[in-house]
Image (cartoon, helix red, strand yellow):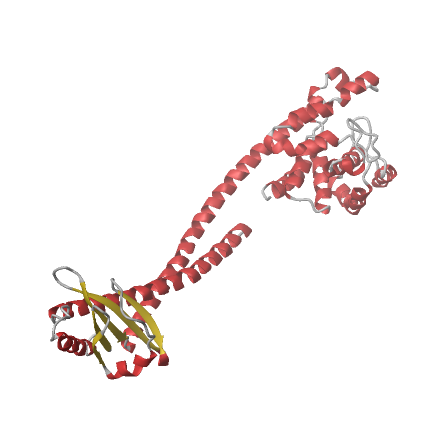
Amino acid sequence: MNLFNRRAAQRIALVSFLLAAVVAPVAWFIATESAEDEVVSLAMEESRRFLRHFDAVELAGPEAKVKAQNAAMTLSGGLFDIAEIYDRSGDKLAESATDLGEIVENQLPKHGLPTYTSASYESLQLEKDRWALRVFIPLRSSEAGQITGYFEGVRIVPEWQRAEIESSAIKIALIAGLAALLCGAAIYPIVVALSADNARKTLEVLDSHISMMEALGRAIAKRDSDTGAHNYRVAWIAARIGEELGLSGGTMQALIAGSFLHDVGKIGIPDAILLKPGRLDENEMAVMRTHVALGEEIVTGMGWLDGAHEVVAGHHEKWSGSGYPRQLAEEAIPLSARIFAIADVFDALSSKRPYKDPMSFEEVMDILRKDTGAHFDPGVMKVFERIALDIRQKLQDSSENAARQLLETQIRKHFTTS
């Protein structure tokens, strides 16, 4: 399992467990409330039906107390442990309770005269872990629908019913939690598939970027009578220095692209000047120096190549401020350009050219050290010295194809992660 898949699995699992931890209690609460509502609804409906049948809704006249007492006694032996019936003024007409009802009656909260106009209930946790449901029902006449009295009943939910409600609620909670986990398990392969597809497309885009960069590099090399190996080598060297400095992501990508395309502006320099075998005069040098500005124009606005701008614009600046075109000094020069300056000179001195043989490693390093503080950033140079010999050994007598492969490894390493 690759790093992305492992992280995706961990994050989806975490979210799934958190979701299950939230959903399960909510589902349990809703299921418990629903079961409680069902018990109360049944009690309310049955009590209404019974009272209508018992003709207790007409709580007036000389027989009102007798009717109410008979109804209360019957109700207290069925759905309720305590049954109380009041007239329309709120005066109690009758009360009846089972043995358990008498035990818990003093535990019930007191309230004033009944004045409610709609049915309601309250759930109460009593002593000894008893659970009581207390219902309040206004009694209405069958004709005008006016309130003629009130019924209040208390049901002590039996253990078997509590166990049944809790068992049902736990099952629903487990199902909800399991559904959350299964949802995460179902999402994971979809995320992995989408990620693989995205990675494939990213590599396709990267390949096209590499091809475009190489095409530009070859065009530069052909115009400058070079093999193109220098561009591969110098970009790889710059990347190695960047890694030693801890660069990554977009900063490293910009360094690699800029180092490879540092001389892209030479495409616009006339052959008479670019290919002149002898020394350039002052006017010709002025034209040659315009390749920096031309290079900036080429890479600016080219999407992923925008990052190359810093090296292209600053690769001829010097630490002392004596470079061109802007005479930037020290840390005003972008770090990527300071890194490239060392990589460029190191490779130029270490490589064989038609007009010269490669210098020895010691000679190259002596020249670089002498120019440190004038041409090169002392801090970057100090870091480079740690890896210079290893770089020289890897590039010694390397072909253009070998240099290309080295750079491609760096590109795939740094351009496929952010």
